[in-house]
Image 1 (tube, rainbow, N blue to C red):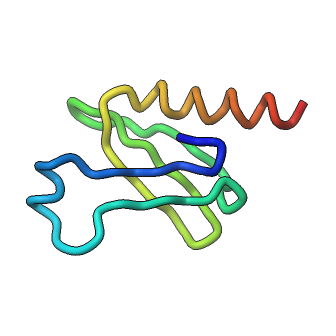
Image 2: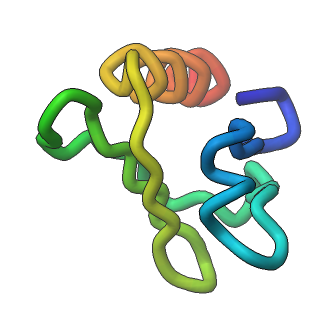
Length: 77
């Protein structure tokens, strides 16, 4: 997560398993909500944005969501 949005860069295993573009950048202005869903072994981060949803699995999913919520709370103040 950056000041500009949420960026996803696939690791080597995911790049090998998935064809085409594996990097995603969702601009902060387009993000409507970020939430965590349960997943075995890794959590699932769901980014709701203007064009739909982007989901990804990662270790530390709770931390990703908390960081986004903290950033948006401080910008709303």
